[in-house]
Image (tube, rainbow, N blue to C red; front, side, top):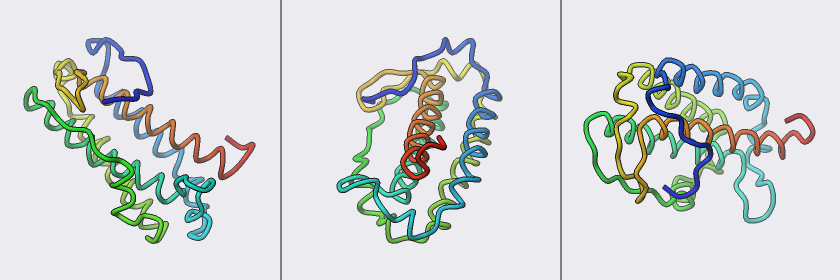
Length: 166
């Protein structure tokens, strides 16, 4: 799985409802400032060679798509799941050319569904293991790291779009 954004918690100490609420809070804290960005401002990259806000949220949408699949598959049984070519996914989908409101709506809707799905995971399933991009991890850690990954990108985005207000 490569880079991780948090340390794993013992899956027996995790609670699906608490994990889903943590994700829901992350979404609800981000949306009010994200919707204030104009379509033009959200199209500008931080600097040359970096993603724009649209592309960053597009990347988080791609992460949602991939991780929703993993969350479901890890409840069914252990398997080997690939990573994904993040840069290519963002480029191929042309997020920078899409309307900002559409990018946000897709990201939000997918994550609201992940909140719903995580809330309904049986607690015992959080210990299920699978190989993701060559790393063996538990379903509980996958969800924890998914949330931390999102928070990482949202904080970075807020820091460079609204300097001094992060």
